[in-house]
Length: 209
Image 1 (tube, rainbow, N blue to C red):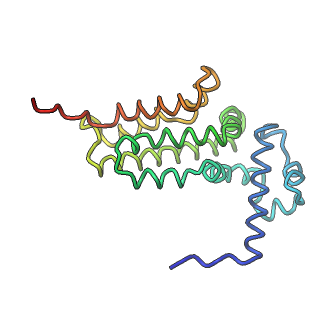
Image 2: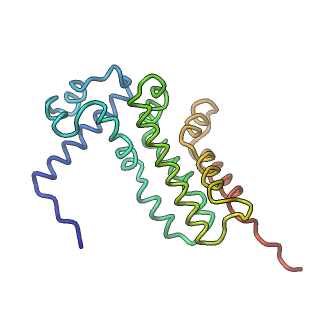
């Protein structure tokens, strides 16, 4: 049964929420969490502070919604959907690398703000932990697809495969490679994908002579 279309009022409310989240994302990345107030976010979104509270909630609630915004801006649903329909084991094994690349490409500023601020701000630590949970869920999905295709390396348990893939394609690792070692996004994605394929996929059988 198709979803009921949103009313005009509901669409306007959704647009307001989206604008508030984008403003929060931008200011958190530019100024940091502590130096950004709800009033600052309201001004950047061209709404009142009360509208921010009524639409989403406190500053902590805004942070909690950042992972959803990151997923949307990075196009994770479309990327995952395309890989899930693929019959190419290499493409499926490289899915996490592709998603991580898109996250860093489109949302690297806010991801960096979360990573650097998490040790001092409990709210950011919670948001970062949620991002990691989603990353693990994505790795679990990839491993499940590889199992269905019967191409997962026989030496790996499903749990070990998930941990391996999640570690290789971790978004914090991608930030380190880019910021500290000057890696381009193309090189980072290529390396993560190739490493994931080498570690996860069953080696091709030797051809009969």
